[in-house]
Length: 245
Length: 226
Image (cartoon, rainbow over all chains, first blue to last red; front, side, top):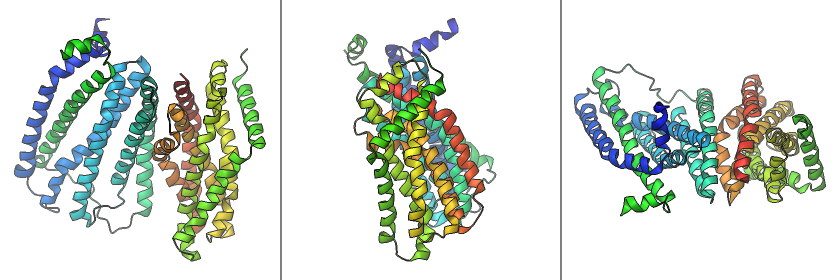
């Protein structure tokens, strides 16, 4: 049973609050360090792409945001499922804290994708399957946040939005597949396919480091939001008074 | 006393059908809405038949989607307001089966009539008579899948105020695959192609919906009733 104590501790808001407060600077510090090193590696050390020249460097911001937008949705759904199954208040709070961060990462992925599309495709927006799927993902985040905001009773809002997150996870692969299928039928040859070129090692390590940096940044923001969420939810509990005075 | 799940489901279906025949406005209104939307497109796009024919799959599917969203609001709301849903949940019968019956009945009363009346709208958009079989089949199967997905959304928004807009916000992103394959099937039917591939995919989504959506809807309704 001893192995499960960490799991039980996660169910206790004061414990999680203290944990988040202790670790936020560490995650934030490592995130900043990783991002600075990765930026230097990506913008200065990595050689220019033979085809896209320096414009390819957008990948160092675009790809990690796009990966994280999906990863955060999965994290949110896992937290939501844990909240539904074990009736854990902290898990619901974590899922609620994930949603706006994930939505912003999705917006960032779309924005950087559009900026990258302008020099590469000659237009800010083309109905590329990955861009379209990302846009639908943004709508899924909106739906989740809308449902949470639309239900007054906090317990009901937690459970209903958790159900929606889980249903969404089942749907995300189907959406992804259908959008790609739709696009392969309609796409004209005018759009340049970027494909997946083999990446040089000098280009690759800053990308992976940037992904790590963004992931750590996500955890940092998540911990901060989680603390705020816990304080709001537990505002009448005695531990909040102790922590804040 | 616990009846077999199918008996309970049949009783629910019969009750819903009887209620609908006594109050037909809920069945007719989404249908009229669909017709009006289909009429608005020629007014905004062009009265030219050849160009309308190209736009027909989009017009029919957007119209069908909006109309089914409108109808979905009535799926659980009345029964939730007058306490029927609560009695269902407390009855000890399988809520999953009863909601599945409700969803199927709902499709019989809204989706199927919409698909059957779609040829009128399609003909007005310049679609030839040979294509009507495919148009009806794709809309019938697609609206069934849509009802199943929508049942989850309708269940989840039971506890919310201003449920209507929220229901659309939740359901539309989830309905994207149905829309893509459905519109593709309609498009192939109009251009004289083989509609089987997108129909199989639409069928796969419907089968997945039949297996999972009633479970999710039942869980959602229970959350809403707590």
